[in-house]
Image: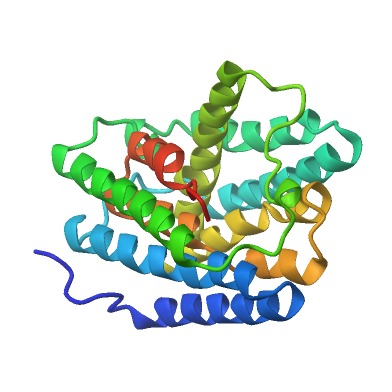
Length: 276
């Protein structure tokens, strides 16, 4: 049995639409129509299309999860880890020294999961089902196709090309290092935000709101990049935080499949925008 309709839990979809509309308005005023259209209207189209596929073909019921053993304490650790992520990101772009804070942020959820004796189900360590892989493949192809098609028809970005994205430190220049960093980052980010944080939020929020809150927190984690790495104006950087496409889609995959391997593949293959 499949969940009927598209975005039938309309409260969260309305909030997502409002966030994207606010971001579009801010970017339109601060930068111009190119940035606004590419970063907000295009993301709305991609989210609607990919989420429609995921919602239609992933299971209606949530995937079984292990019962949380200390939700309040574990959520507190997640929030401490999140603060360390923000400090580490700021330190990276300001001082070039991020590892002490980021290491602490990564270790907190890992220590919490291991020390509490959580099993493979809590980590999402099972082989994906063929149907889940099929949905993932469709979502990846749809994301790629839409981003390429939209990039061909949308107005150009007003941002200078050298300011668009600077995710990798200058020391990491080889293809092998870039791939390694991408894989490690995908694994650690998915474990922190989806595997660890989202279920702890869901202990206090309805599942769909837990997905949205972690997606907003995931987007906000890029604020230091926008402000100190790309040096975007504060209004534009704040507006970009409202783009929750990747976090919402990954959170929904985790909620419905409980599979870490799917999240990692989704992160590596569908989070990039090709031409946008």
